[in-house]
Image (cartoon, rainbow, N blue to C red; front, side):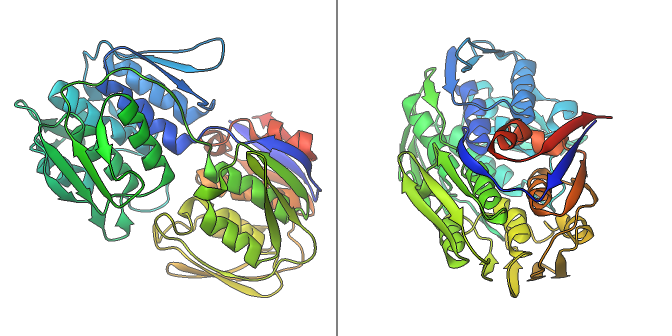
Length: 422
């Protein structure tokens, strides 16, 4: 198991290129199941979650390889084992994305109930309901979702909303299944996240007929077959937001390349509201902070609202603001496991249900801390950059799930992060 030693505080400067989006890559990898043959995906980052998804596809019968350019090649000509085994699926929640395409292609799928980060209850009932609406027969047995559609799937009008808004992975699953369904499917209250838009664009390039992309109403005209694709995934807006916070929390200036601000308007708005400048430059932006951090209030919401995946990072930043800020978590109300660890570093945080009151302090103090999930891990790294002393972060395998060699990308900018195996 690896740990990080982070010496702080530091100032950062320079440029960093944002990698392809993990949350776009994973469902697109699953979508290759729909198209027998060799697909090539570009800008796929080297992450443990990507490796897990690759192993899952290999288990189904696909062949996975990286070519000399670093592109990910997936040959899905053969799918001879339509089963997502527990030992792999438990490692990553996005594994559930194979359910829809497997069912559509093979007429049957068995997928273990998924695992992933401990950020609260995330049921898959909307996934199951949507696939049932398409005509699938589904039951649960021994922790597995057993789905069958021996006569194929049939298009239907389906409402995808849930108690916390639209479901991203649920939309992805039902959207992929609907591409091969007979007739017309309408997904109402579909997720509008850029990653869903990217998936739909990729599916259309594979031969699907999807309209309404980017809106909460997706219309899918079923096709008989899909074709392999060469496709480049979008930049990772959550990684971009994390590096933006790195610039802000260290009172620095960073240039981000390959960063799409159009996908991050709610985030950019909050940065500007607290005194951090974000200016467009080339295919990215320049982020800078000079002076104190102002307070603000943040409520996480489905896209285009403020993303839950940047809640922890902003909590660290606001812990150094002058005054009190309020963060309300409306996507995963229990996603606050980082609160206790940040409090160990002298952050003044008061949690009441899905609300955290952040009372700004002048300085964070280094301490040994424990990473609990992917985005909480990123928040602890950011805290370490600004804290006085040596911060030790345990269980950094969480951060490797979503950030490619983050220490090797931050250190050239001025960070002092050492990875150690214990």
